[in-house]
Image (cartoon, rainbow, N blue to C red; front, top):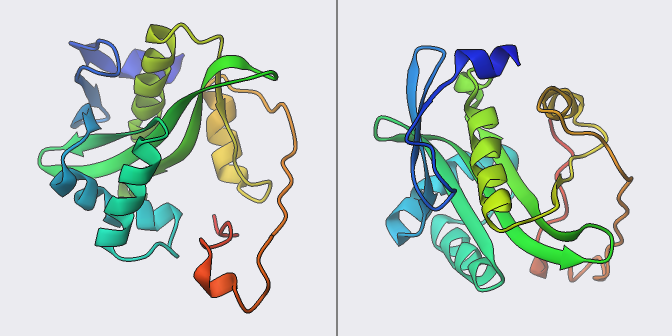
Length: 184
């Protein structure tokens, strides 16, 4: 709650619209990213979470392919600079029913702790509410203790342990999408 008291929201509508906030002496604008040039600008930020990503052009193509499956990318701007991004999608399954799943959330290291991550989550939550979802879901690595603490502070609770199996042969591994990073 203390964080919410420090954040002054103006013109904060559905995730489709823009939101502006004053966060720890920073003016932040959150908006949905659709233009190819802006998607390309998000690449450098995404590299902080997913350092094994291919080049900018491959990143843009991947975002476009995922977009065909409902993936949305929103970014936090401080002036003309992107300082954080969130990628999320509307899904439906037997476990959660209609929900929004957060695939990616990353904030530039130098502005972590300034409330940018909370604003990005709020934008995706607003979209989930607009879409009449019952749940807002994300996953993080068991080794990412700082991320887990952040999600707890955002009112989120753990619900499962995920499992993954590599399906490619070791020789084919270079051709497949990179395995989950074991960093932060």
